[in-house]
Each structure stands twice: as C-alpha cells, then as structure tokens.
Length: 386
Ligand code: KG4
Ligand code: ZN
Figure 1 (spheres, rainbow, N blue to C red):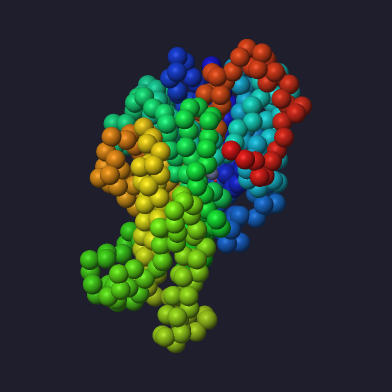
Figure 2: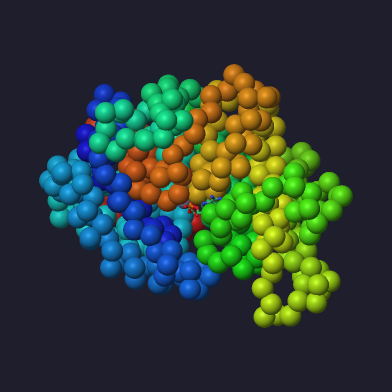
C-alpha cells in the first residue's frame, strides 16, 4: 500500500510517500520545503504569506516526493492531508490540492488531524522498516527500531500551537487529560526568543543559547540567578490537574530583561550582552521543561500507560528529551519511551501518511470505498478537535 501525505498547516510545505506492507512502514520520500527565511523578516508566521508560498511550492514538492520515491501518481493507493487545526489560508492550499489530486486520479482521500500526525510520528521510529529507503541514521535511534508499541500510550504533545497530555487506550481513542490554559510551549519559546532578540524561529535559538551556558561556572551565573534557587516560576507545577500555563513564565522573562536593562542603564538601541542572553535562555528552558516533565510523570503515575510518546516540534529540544528520559528511568522504568528522530518531530508529511495508514487498516471495505468521494466533502477546520 502506497500513501501520499500532504501537510501545509503552518509554514512548511511537506509531502511524503509511505509504503506499508504487512505492518512495516517504509518512508520512500519525505520532502519539507520550509518558509523560515520568509517569515523570519516578520518575526513570526504571516498566514497569507504562508499560503502564497504553499501555492508556489506545492507542485514542485509533489514532483520531488514522487521522483525520490520512484513512484507515479497512478501508483498511489491513498491520499492523506492535514485538514486542521492550523492557519486557515495555509490549510486550504493543502486540502484543496489534495482534493484536486483525489478527483483527477480517482483516489481515496482521508483528512488527518495535525496533532494526530505528531503523535503517530512516534510509530515511525518504532515500526519503520529497517530496509526502507529512508533509514534513520543515528545509532542511538536505531536501537529503538521495531519495538512493539503497547497501549495505553501517554503523549506529551508540545508544538507551536498546542501543549497537551493525551491518553490513548487504543488507536484513535484520544482523551486529552491536560492542556495549556494560555500559550503553547513552542509559542513561549518563540516569544521568549523575541524578547531576547534571537529572532524566529525561537525554539532552536533558545536551545542553542541554553546549551552554551554552563551553570556550574559560577562566574557565568552572575547576571540573573545569583544565589536564588530559581529565578523564574514553574507555573502550575503543583496544581492538582495536568494543565499547563506558559504565559506568566514568558512575562517573568520580560520583566527580568526590563529590570536588567534598567539596572544596567541600557538604552533601547543597546543589545543585550551575550552571557545574559545565554543565562536567560537556560533559565527559561529549565523552567519550561521542569513543568512539562513533572506533569508528564505525574500523569503517568495516575494513568499507568505502557508507553510514553513525546510529540510536536518542541520535542526536538534535547534538554526536554533528556530530562523526560531520565525522569522516566528514575520513577517509572518499566515504561517504554523512545527517541523520535528530529526529522519527524517538527512538521512533516510522513507523520500524516503514517496516521492515515493506521486509520486505513482499521476501516471496513465500505468505509474505504467511501473515501473515493471525500474530495467532495472534506472540511478544512482551523480549530479541529482531536
Ligand atoms: O510541531 P511544529 O513543527 O509546528 C506546529 O505544529 O506548531 O512546532 C513548531 C514549534 C515552534 O514553536 C518552534 O520554536 C518549536 O517547535 N521548536 C523548538 C525546537 N525546535 C522547534 N522548541 C524548543 N527547542 C527546539 N529545539
Ligand atoms: Zn506541528
């Protein structure tokens, strides 16, 4: 079975081709055309510009994906597309393109929830065919290949638009047990990066700055922390639920920066010193990941999952991954936790095709046949619920 996946919910035009045979996944191609350079000038994603770029790129991206996979449109058995949530002008390019392809080539068409895609990206590294054309190259990741994924699964979903703890008792049975009450984790990384004048996208920039800060070098710590244990708050750490809040943390960073500017007589046009930026990035990353990890462990202790997934763009953050991994080993070592390759953490279409492959397997032949008509009915929904 060959599946074409399409993803345009934000600022990546992504198309992937996946082959699934006897439960084995092979990613034949996974093309992502990023618009980072375009949006960086505006300090964030501009929805209409994103749509214009998707429109410009989507046919070349499709051609590359087919070429790399050595397939033609006629070889495709199913088309899967992200139909929400996301930026509506961006989503509409992908869904209308998918509908057109489905109509032209008379193919079944399936809409996939973007967060479902991020969660199912974890199945790629668990069940990918080691002989597939697109191999995972990092040895650390290869040790996790071909493990059975056992339910219940608890997913910590951390992206630019979402922060959720999602419990799955089986495929597609989602229960959101906690979520952010304001900013998403990735959004907080992006906003803090802006405060620290690190530009867009903020997550990788914060992470690089934080990695360059060495907390054990006390002379490096003079700027913010001094002898206080934590300068920044850990919002909702001890709330009785599994919800999050990142907006106050971002504001605490803003006030710390404003105070620093005042105390050091910095003018508006003066840039912040590098060691201050590194320490602030470190402190913010520590605060954000402390809360994410603590709440995930608490949720796991309550719901007893067999497996924990880390999903969404922020899962590319090595501090978050390492901290969660260590906390699982210490508190709940029996739980299966695997490292997802970065390629599948941030937005891509292989994750969309993977989710579709599992949905397809769980469908009756009538349901599969009905997908031939989806090109007429598929709705695009910026607020689509999981
Ligand atoms: O899942 P994703 O690619 O797109 C959305 O669905 O939103 O996530 C993008 C988010 C952005 O906020 C970006 O800053 C963040 O993921 N991100 C990171 C890292 N890489 C990407 N955040 C922290 N550390 C990173 N290394
Ligand atoms: Zn995403």
